[in-house]
Length: 397
Ligand SMILES: *Cc1c(COP(=O)(O)O)cnc(C)c1O
Image (cartoon, rainbow, N blue to C red; front, side):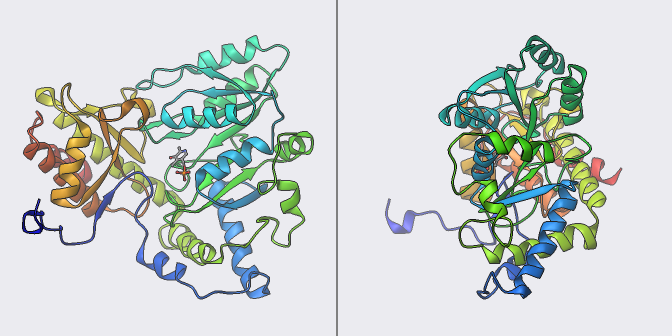
């Protein structure tokens, strides 16, 4: 193709409707662009400890937090190597691509992985979890791993029900929860729900660049850490506790904390955490209303078929048989400069995902839905036109 035939580059900022990374508010971007400071300087320590206190409020915990320079995968790894020993059994609740990936990591680290199998569209039966725990009379299972919000399928797993299954069986396993795409967008309460390790990352609900991750850690987990024998170095909580900032064995990524300070201010002071969650619920309903409308005429439909578990931070949309989700995403990206999430793992090409978490408002949601409907139309995908009107009705209600 000669240069003259290359399609023109779309104008405007790339419209970003991915479930992670997410849009970064301008004030957070500006705060992140901070000149270098000495991370041992008391002036920085003040910013740092204010961020830690804020992070604990968002996690709803009065216990410990450890942080890592690395994406969510780093905190996943930290939660395993600090709590478990070679050959230990971890029971993973199957939810989709992310539960599988966390399980693969556990296996690679030398753990024995058991799974509570689940239909990815309906989600795990808590009764199956309870049965697996009850059957484990010797308490071989040392940890239960659950992805609070399965970003690949748009499904939320109710953590209080998971906690209740552990309590009902009197099972002492640690509860590990991946909150990477739920923290700051869905209700999460680490202490109240008895979560022992809460895995979080910067680039989703917290509206920051990618590269900072952390774990909220319970006192019970700290106790388990003392005897956990999986090899670790950078992630070693014990070593971190010896450092002045009680985290980070190496250089502290200071810019993140100037950004985090601002994103916490936006969430807690400017909007209020409860309002942040309510906004996610409101926008998610509008997205689902549009998709449910499109599903007429054998159009694209909601992947999650369990109304109680539909995620308020991401919606996965299943394409009609014979239509490629990635072709639709290419139309959206190349013609309209709209980035949508794709299907992960076995769902590649079968679905696309609309992220509705983080720094997002009605015009952005409507822009995304209108552009998706446009891409569906020009892509020749069957659907019932008028999904955007359904979203408008939902938002106006
Ligand atoms: C994004 C995500 C991850 C992976 O995090 P990275 O930052 O990409 O390493 C893990 N779990 C869930 C639920 C996610 O949404």
